[in-house]
Length: 313
Length: 259
Ligand SMILES: Nc1ncnc2c1ncn2[C@@H]1O[C@H](COP(=O)(O)OP(=O)(O)OP(=O)(O)O)[C@@H](O)[C@H]1O
Ligand SMILES: Nc1ncnc2c1ncn2[C@@H]1O[C@H](COP(=O)(O)OP(=O)(O)O)[C@@H](O)[C@H]1O
Ligand code: SF4
Ligand SMILES: [Mg+2]
Ligand SMILES: [Mg+2]
Image (tube, rainbow over the protein chains, first blue to last red):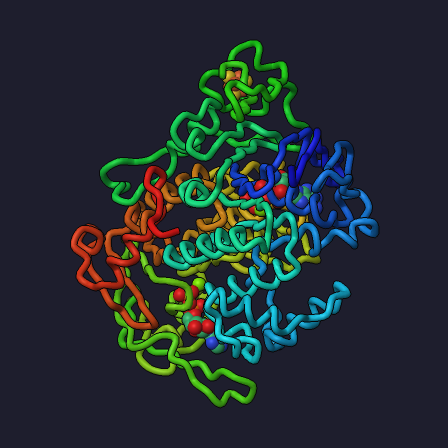
């Protein structure tokens, strides 16, 4: 098992109280598995990714255990995390492309980045990997502006996997890319796994159609909790959680037009994470809600590898 | 309403600006009131550059951009921005991290509605937030880093709506939204369109462009390769590039080949 997360709780401290962005999430990622993480904006996906690598000052680990390759991962302690970060677990953050410093050449940026993490660049290995993702070696002498979005994204992928981490977290790395570039990114990620540059992956995206092209398993979160987790195919074709079902039915497939068939989102808003409701967090929007939903539904394995947190599943 | 005529933009790149690259190459198209025109193309094809020129965040080297017949570069900026607003792909870049995120609302109040009573203004803000499915209590009075990417993006859309503009330049505004919120935002745009808003809908997502736009412009390396009614572009694409784009759209029930 590459990653094992038990009852993880991470809150943000604010003046008005704690924002319970991750509130008791448990899941595993097997060796070689690509886990797709989906869910409404604000449900805690980025928080989960950040918690596994670097908590920012306002994040507070309230509870839970994380193991990476059988070893306890000290996520609550930024200093103790140093030996793991980047070498064992690495992240491609949301908006990493736009975060590239425009005044630095790519090569210099790579060197500075690796220096700051106490690693020296193995130039041969770097070149070999650039070749693999079909980036010419002169990208290192270019400025970020001279690279297309797809090229920048491949560059970021190469840098963040240079030390062969066990786990790579990719946060919305394809959202800004056009479809043909998305396809290239997905192919590259799969290739990285095949070549052993990364063992397992958490691939965060809003786009379930895209996740389904890559992920072995899909986990759907809702308001800081796990709603459903199952093999990708099961989520797409036989989801059991009402939220997953509604999310999938709101996807526009090519060919659907507003004038002919108006799609609908899920009515209502997700609950505030400052004072989330007791019981199922989807109850205010759920068409199937009944009395029992005022108690919290546990995540139950309804069939092999298929977990659902819903009283009606 | 908005008309681009043979607009080009050339950037100087490299350390001393020695090289040039043509990001937008003689592009012409129009957006009318009550119409959504989608601008589709891969990353780097020049979509955002066009959006920025329309919004006067950049100047064009060649060609003209007119709004109701007036050359936009000659219009007074404040009056122009009362009619046209932009929302961009990366919401984080539109906020100053040291101020609360809702400052984006108070700023437009100061500039455009200084006389409006606070009570009325607050109701307007609440209504605009409701249109983008945010709750005031959840998003007001917070710093940008306390909100998620999708929440920040919806605040910016709400701000544009408060101005009651004629044209919205929406540059990849839905790429950070989940499927359900995305549909709500698209339906909202469609609703505003029927009330007369024109939208330049920049996207790399063909399904979304097809869903709401009347006309589609397909851009490839800064040039228009296809331009016409959306159904026609999608059903009988003439250019090989358009066909390639259509073939690589990820579909829920179909796996990509060769991945
Ligand atoms: N520093 C912070 N202080 C307080 N609340 C925060 C902070 N950062 C995030 N939050 C809140 O925590 C929740 C989860 O945020 P997170 O960024 O993990 O969402 P996400 O699922 O990645 O969303 P998106 O899909 O929009 O990127 C949101 O409600 C957000 O407003
Ligand atoms: N300020 C700039 N200086 C130099 N080149 C730029 C600048 N802005 C954009 N470009 C280049 O112009 C091309 C078009 O960019 P852009 O309009 O952002 O594309 P899109 O929005 O379609 O992804 C890209 O190759 C990009 O690198
Ligand atoms: S537990 Fe109840 S409210 Fe929650 S998803 Fe299931 S039926 Fe709906
Ligand atoms: Mg996020
Ligand atoms: Mg762009």
